[in-house]
Amino acid sequence: MPACPKPWPASGGTPRPKANRRRKRVAATAAIIQQLLAPIQDDLRGKRDRALILVGFAGALRRSELAAIRVERLEKTDRGLRLTIPQTKGPQTESVVVPLPYGQTSCVRCAR
Image (tube, rainbow, N blue to C red; front, side):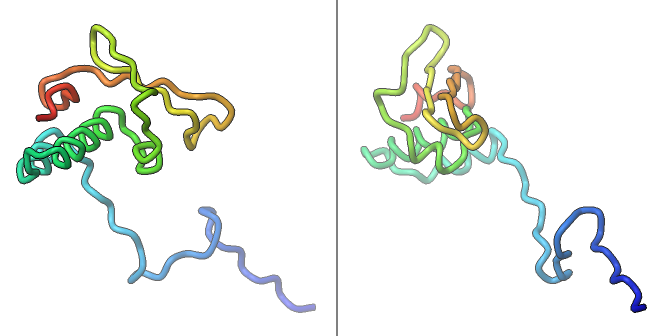
């Protein structure tokens, strides 16, 4: 009777070759966000870009969630903005409310 093949590692799936392993990325900090915002122009397009970067940072949003933002889903509060996202990667059946607080480094209101 032939021997049984060896099972894959406990991590599951086929292991990646060393050359194709993903590198860990550095998390964005307030300093990195400020560096991203610095070269953006002060026209209408630049204000939109700044707002999207700050909303994504303050709300820890994914690209798909940023792309799905609509103005009518933003609600102004005393402490900042409240964003309602209809579908996220997590709960698929209900919408998620994301608070976007006003702050020193990630103030969406100050995206000028």
